[in-house]
Amino acid sequence: MFEGVATRLPVTFHGEGSGEGELTWGQREIWHTMRRTGRTLNIGGVLALPPSATVAEYAGLLEYLVGRHQALRTRFVLDAGGDPVRQVVDATGTVHLDLVDGPTEAEAEALRGRYEFTPFDLEREYPIRMGVVVRDGAPSHLVVQYSHLAVDGFGIDAIVRDLAHRGAEHPPPPSGLAPLELAARQHSPAGRKQSAKSIRYWRSLLADVPPARLPGSDDPRTPRFRELVCRSPALHLALRAIAARTRAETGHALLAAYAVALARVTGIRPVVAQVLVSNRFRPDCADAVCHLTQPGLVVVDPGPGAAPVPFDELVARVWKSATAAYLHGYYDPAEHRAMLDGLAAERGATIDLSCFVNDRRGPSAPGPAPDGAQARAALPRTTVRWERELPTYDGRLYLQVDAAEDAVQLGIWADTHAIAPAAVERFARELEAVAVTAA
Image (cartoon, rainbow, N blue to C red; front, side, top):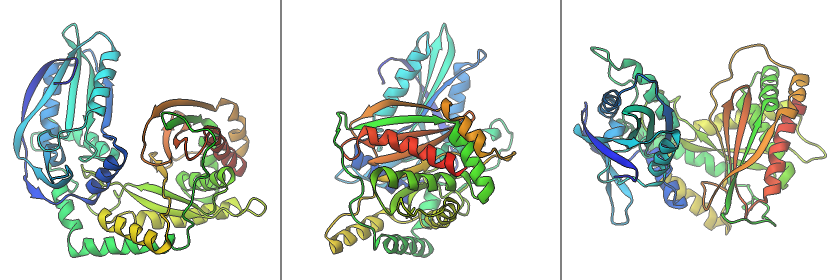
């Protein structure tokens, strides 16, 4: 039982489909990251509940979710080293709804932290934790955390969309592939062919990339990793203006500005970044409740400072490079790591692939495009602040992009032993400035 939990209500579930099979590529990918970083990577959050909420309602919700989605009633078979090697889907079993007594949101946030930073017992625990904070006998907050082995962020979105079927007399079956079906498809001859094609593409891109990337730091900190958060209405307007002019997505415009800014601040050329690929465009995957996300590879040379590539041309190059990255961000992680190890052995040096971009915004919303003057006028409203610190993270420079109200929010996790905090802040400011100037 987690600290602070007063009661654990057993919730029995029944669901369609069961069995045992291989892990999916996405599961193997995220497990490798969890092992490498020592992080749980559990994902979820806290939701304030309406006054009409009842404990029985959320016990019913937990029963529905686990019975409905095979990914949420999955356990794992571990090898001698503690690594998951097989997944087992149960048709029936028991999960628990935790009840916490508390008057404020602080109790909910404390439970969220305990859920997030406690590793799941992969052999015995189902990959969902749900708790309700109860105030004066009435629920005030819902806390949910999932194991990242079960779902990625897009899988959680699919769960939320599927809630529309709750309460239907005859709900349709879930529309996306279940994890066991996905694993079987990936291990088929067609899946092996796709993996081999993707790995050949990565190898061809990396053939001429210098192994050393980030410049090093004269200001290392402890804990080693720090998060810089930049909230920019100006960047939001600038990206929309560039996208309208170039007929690209705002994500392509952002990647182009990223490449220019990183090259200016670090001297790195070409810019090499792993972009997180949802793989939801693949057949039967749009609504799949599972972990499908894998890295794709983008290599962009913005040109030297004295003769940079014109920005609109750079956006077109990024569009082409990013599209290819999305198509080839789907492969067997073991074969992929073997390729990288082989390439390092051939060259006598490991290629640094520690820069990541995870753009979690959706497609551009329709509407009239702003102009550059509007973007420049919004610059004074930008806020930049340092927030969390951690001893480890997924990459040495990890850019997470989120939509905020009339703004773009950049969350930049940086290894302060590889790039100084002052350089990270210059990078955030430069990315915004590049986009605003281009707009």
